[in-house]
Image 1 (cartoon, one colour):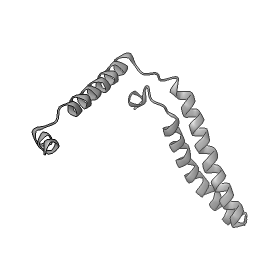
Image 2 (image 1 turned 180 degrees about the vertical axis):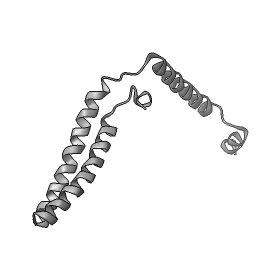
Image 3 (image 1 turned 135 degrees about the horizontal axis):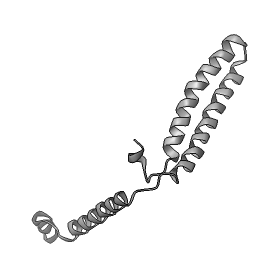
Image 4 (image 1 turned 90 degrees about the horizontal axis):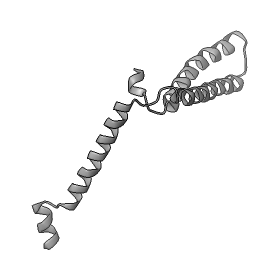
Length: 108
């Protein structure tokens, strides 16, 4: 799985993982706070929101730190540059040579 993520910025997957864990853990902790300790609803909701934001930010930071540990491999970098150069040259060719129907529309 890490081969697919190699060379990419891991901040967004880290934030997604942290936010998902924050929602799950936040619901569990909020349920325990509300049922066992009879905490007011506002406090429970603010705690749940704080857990979500904290774990999302933690995932973002961890993902940014891990991004530098998994640089792109040379073969992957060359393949990506070949695909990008091919795509840009195809766009240039298609823009510069109109088809027969386009020529008829332009001249009429």
